[in-house]
Length: 289
Ligand SMILES: NC(=O)c1ccc[n+]([C@@H]2O[C@H](COP(=O)([O-])OP(=O)(O)OC[C@H]3O[C@@H](n4cnc5c(N)ncnc54)[C@H](O)[C@@H]3O)[C@@H](O)[C@H]2O)c1
Image (tube, rainbow, N blue to C red; front, side):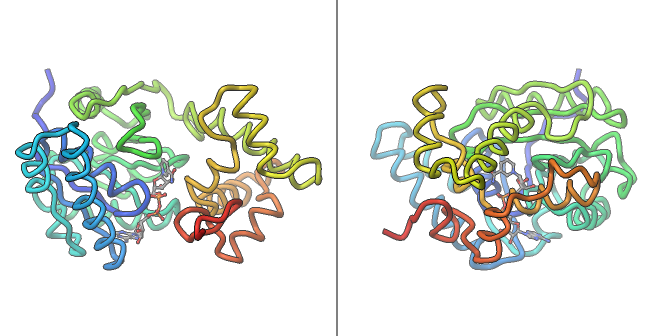
């Protein structure tokens, strides 16, 4: 039996992933505090919640009371201490930079109650690269949601060698209470399950594009119609953020020196031009129109 039941969840980072994980948790009955260093992003996250919940009521997916109760359970602050001091579980969703995550986990270790579990939503970084900055490595694990987190059911929970059975049990329980479908990875592996498979497709699509063989639209059309994916690799790149792909491939390339991880020329170009996809209004597609 798990050693405690999670009641309070703290989400670090209110960006693409964080605000939707926060709202999913609030809808599942958890008390949630979401924090970000960027006030504008925090405001956008709060506005999203205030728009999304009434829309669900209009669509008949939530009652007025359920919507009000979920809204009352989620709050936003830029103060990390205020956000994390009562947390039973923290889910970190800041940008994919190892040193930043290590710094945040070291701070969290000082702020959070001793029993609290510290999870990272990182797409690629295994928690053993972070856990050693805390005095509770057995309570540090990967909890990888998918985008958009309100819709996508899968969560990859990774049991690194330092993670206790109790931690995994509690995290799997939280996923289920949030209406998610968790899968447990018994070992740490770079990119976990899904991103390893998706990356192979994405890298091949970028290679085909860089070779001048076909446009993003045509490559996406081919993948959607032939493989039955809900969207093609370029639409997916725009959704997840071109910046994220840039950070991930650059970091992996620097770490391994393996040319297969070197960011594709078009990713570098779009990163420099700040054409990061939906979040900046333009990526491989134009969202300003
Ligand atoms: N985008 C995706 O599709 C996706 C999917 C699954 C997992 N992830 C992972 O989730 C994490 C977040 O990705 P994202 O796409 O939401 O990024 P994002 O850039 O949209 O959001 C990150 C947020 O972190 C905030 N931040 C930066 N430093 C901070 C700090 N010190 N304290 C608090 N907040 C801080 C930023 O202001 C920003 O709002 C990454 O690790 C990524 O690998 C992303």
